[in-house]
Amino acid sequence: MTTTVSATPESDREHPPPPGPSRPEGRPRWFGALLLRLHFYAGLLVGPFILVAAVSGALYALTPAIEQGVYQHELHAPVTDTRLTLAEQTEIARSHIGDAAATPTAVRPAPEPGDTTRIMFADDELGESESRAVFVDPGTGEVRGDLTVYGTSGALPLRTWLDQLHRNLHLGDVGRLYSELAASWLGIVALAGLGLWIRRIRKSRTKKDFVRPGRGRSGYRRLFTWHTSVGIWVLLGALFLSATGITWSQHAGSNVDTLRAAFDWGTPAVDARLPGGGAEQGAAEDDGGGEHAHHGGADETGGTGGAGGAGGAADPAMLDAVLATAQAVNINTGLVEITPPTEPGTAWVVQEIQRSYPTEVDAVAVDPDTMQVLHRVDFAEFPLAAKLARWGIDAHMGSLFGLPNQLVLFLLASGIATMVVLGYLMWWKRRPTREPRTLGGTPPQRGVLRGAPWWGIAAVLGAAVAIGWWLPLVGWTLAGFVVADVLVGLLRRPGRSGAGRG
Image 1 (cartoon, rainbow, N blue to C red):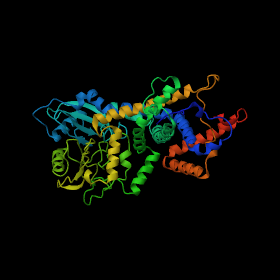
Image 2 (image 1 turned 135 degrees about the vertical axis):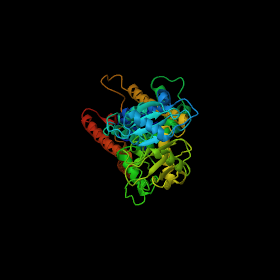
Image 3 (image 1 turned 180 degrees about the vertical axis):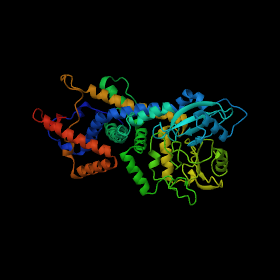
């Protein structure tokens, strides 16, 4: 029920409705007719955006597992009995890039035996949130790779390419409008489809066709049973993807950030300021905007991240001591990122980056002069809203439960894409065969609010305004739909009569 473009009632007598004025019994049914019209036009016009988002999202969901194979040489190394210090590995990375004075923007020690250490450097030739990563064998010092990585998630080139396709079609900020449009409308179309499903299953004599594809059906009815049954199974997942996807958007996402700030739902962030240092970065609490800076995953707990600016006078020889200090406090997972001070007056930051469950994103700030912990944040002490935001983001990206999470996302996104295709096929099947110029099926009846009570009209208008304010792209496109529908009705009025006008 998520992305249909033409939902047909149990009986063909209901779609399209009979021409003529509203019937006496039409008043109680105005809401169902409104849902049908909304479901039809929203799916028809926004379906292509949802289809692209679903297909690219399905591919992106599998990339964490695919990366392990494609970048096997860079990510892994033979297990040895020896282990170089982080300072020694950093010197090797410096020599590799040809700059003995370069300070890494972040270092990720090898989390397990057989893994490589990732040492990241700023590069003026790279884009926003990108870093140059040198992969070093912690046992032998062999440089295993040199790749561009993206965001705090450390996405490698393949995942970065698919991420940008899913997020903005590689068109920059302008392209982000497509993904926001898809995420915003997906939930609305899904809820409208749910309303139609409830309305029809109550009246149907073959209720089983609404929870599994009907057997022995053909043509339009076969498509319809597949659409309704698959739709109800992907409904909750579609609503989840819509809600979490909106948080990354430009316009609706800013409303989410404002709401979180108003209710003090921000994510606690480590304070990296040294006493009396005067640095402005490292605020004690994140306002929420950093969580959704990009789909690749910004640093939700306030660390400066691997894409930060070039370091100041931080000495990489301190890496091992800083990590040992943090491990004595609350850093107890192998997945860690160490960030040197990015400017005078700031501390080292050691941040857990384990996004799988149980979530490990504790962080500490370490004074480079005294090796004392200045500030710490612990995920266990996060407000519930911040924890839910963290889990929602990680589940959306497929990292919360690992491979099972990724497979579920792939199936869910594939199901949503299938719904779009089935909807268009249903629309095509409904086209009048005696009118070869007709592109598709007859739209649902116009003027559905004429039979609604005053309170129903007021509720619809109020809901439209509220949704349009919260989801700006929905408001703009909905206004466009209404204007276009009115114009079409006016243009067709002289040549057609009754409710059959589209």
